[in-house]
Structures are given as C-alpha cells and as structure tokens.
Length: 103
Length: 103
DNA sequence: CGGTATCCCTGAGGATACTG
DNA sequence: CAGTATCCTCAGGGATACCG
Image (tube, rainbow over the protein chains, first blue to last red):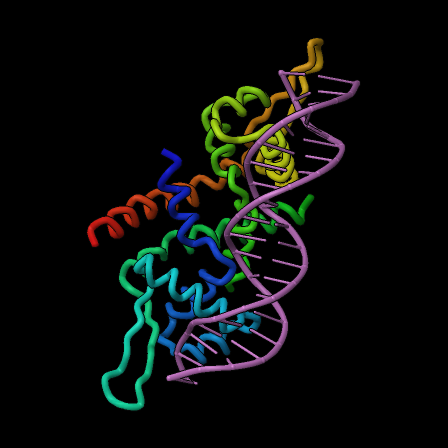
C-alpha cells in the first residue's frame, strides 16, 4: 500500500529532477540551454539526471537527422502525467510555509 | 515557483517519513508499536524521523499524565493535510509501474 | 556543443551497545 | 519502554579537467 508512494518518491529523487522536468514542461531544450536555465547545476549532474529521467520514460532525447546534429530534450506524456503530483506538492508546500511561520 | 515544490519534497525527505505518517493516519501509536509496524527501521532512525516530523508539525507527541507514563504519537491536522499529496503520489506510482513494465 | 572521467567530501542512514 | 551514544559505510553530489 505504501509501495506505490515510495516508488513515486524514488523516481523524483535527485536534487535537480523536478527543476529539469518543470523546465521541459514549458519548452523543449538542448543540453546547454538547460544548464543555463538551472543556475547551480554542473554538466555532470545535468547529464546524470537527464539519463535517469530518460530511463524512467519521463523525458525523451531526440537527435536531429541533419548536420549539425542537435540533441533536444522534451517531456513525454508520462512525464506530463506528473502534473497533478506537482500541483499538490506545490499547494501543500505553500500551506506548509504558512503553517511553520505562524508559530 | 518551484520553491514550494522543493519545500514539500524537503519535508517529506527521509527514508521512513511517509511510512511513519501513513501508520499514524490509521491510529495513534507508541514508539515500540511503530518500530514493530515498520519492519526494517532501527530505533535510532525512528527517533530521528519522529523528531523531524514533530518539528515540522506533522505529528505530535503526547505524554499521559498518570503513571506509568505513556508517550503517544499522533498525526496533526497539518499532517492530515498531506492527504492529497499522498493520494496523488500513490496514483502516479501505480501508473508509473505499469508504464515501466509494459516496455 | 554535449557530454565523460577523476577525484573528493559530506551526510544520510545502518549496527550495536547502552541508559533512565 | 523509549529512546541516546558511538562508530562506520556508502552513495549522492561537487570541482575540475578533458574529449570527439
């Protein structure tokens, strides 16, 4: 019963996963662009996180056929299906902040 | 914009937090009972996680006045307000499992 | 541009023993 | 029963340099 919840957390685990997913929600991006959008991330971590997201089918990496080759990352339908989760986390995060500060 | 999401994740972070919260959703429990309900957890980790959950106002620890003193943990209203988050994580976790296995 | 390869360090979490 | 105290391990993640 708790397992699916744990699974979900596990997939979203990693310091930059949600930042990357949220970026790609707005538009498709190439590697360098993502690195610029997410200020503190290193190339190494960006590379690692992208691979894990791809393995979990949340994003996809496409290569343009023509030269110069371009590698573009985009969110999959499965990735988009995280929307409700993110919305609830967002709502609760705001609420929690209030709750903590009013004490 | 991403900050509240990060906050929420941060509060739920820790290997046993959700397990503990879900246990306490069903009934109030004392330390030893929780340790029994969550098979792999050690006393040290249970103690740590309980303290963090209490600091974040998700659970409360009450001491019975009469001897023998009993220490009971229960979920707060704020803790209960995580319900929607947990439900969405659960739904998505199930969906994700399907998605991964059908490949 | 789109990454790898190395090296390193910290902190989450485990094992075990002990206490009031 | 309800935890603390100690010690230890390992993996997540940072810094930096390099490659096709």
